[in-house]
Amino acid sequence: MGDEVAFVELDGVGMTFRGRTGAYQAVRDFNLELSEGEFFCLLGTSGCGKTTVMNMLAGFDAPTEGQIRLEGRPVRGPGADRGVVFQGHDSLYDWLTARDNIAFGLRLRGMGRAERRSIADRFLNMVGLAGQGGKHPSELSGGMKQRIQIARALANDPRMLLMDEPFGALDAMTRAVLQGELSRIWSENRKTVLFITHDIEEACALATRVGVMKRGPGGTLKAVVPLDLPYPRERTSDAFMASFRRVHELIHAEIHPQ
Ligand SMILES: Nc1ncnc2c1ncn2[C@@H]1O[C@H](COP(=O)(O)OP(=O)(O)OP(=O)(O)O)[C@@H](O)[C@H]1O
Ligand SMILES: [Mg+2]
Image (tube, rainbow, N blue to C red; front, side, top):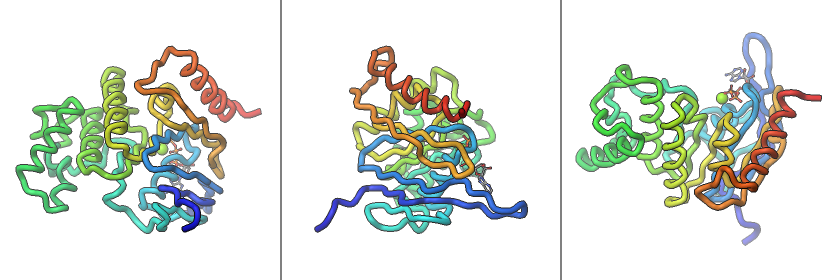
């Protein structure tokens, strides 16, 4: 009995990095609850702590303060329930082909070769790289590697997607296509998504809620803007533009503090 447990809960989360040059409190008192199936976009100026928050939720770094819980259980490390798309595109295995990179997690789970290949090819196709599966990462452009990373995360069918500026390196056309695909995959499979971006329009097109962070040190969640608009979003509608302006004001205040 008792209160319903949030799917994801960041409870007073903080991160202080300690290095040779001393301690730096990157994130402080970060509180957020996500319900299952939400698409939460996290925005904030460069260096405010977005990637730090994602790394803690992914289980790569343990918070130095507070706690992160998934369905009520503390996060103790990475898990197949959380698929990660990293900022930048250097997380692929160079010795594996694009297809084998995508299928890597499926292989670890013991899936047979034919099924792995068919799933990998489906996602290669989805990210516009049909026929490129035999290439190695060193033979692919930055944007292509980024798309392989996205395909890899989706192919594993995790409950939650953690995406750190996944479309940042892509040209406008590919970006628009993948925004549409991601939105469709999300609405069909009701995955919970934490999506980091610098692009306010992208956030307003995709998110059920947009969170804006305060700049660091001590970066924290400053405001959350709910976006109760139907999908696919009509980017020229008054309601969309009002949301865009609201998020823009919040970010602008961080770039040009009083
Ligand atoms: N391993 C680390 N050791 C020390 N400081 C770190 C470490 N990782 C991040 N930081 C610092 O923490 C702060 C937040 O970094 P983070 O990468 O989370 O920012 P971000 O919001 O993702 O920025 P960007 O938009 O540029 O990707 C920065 O000041 C950064 O220098
Ligand atoms: Mg970052």
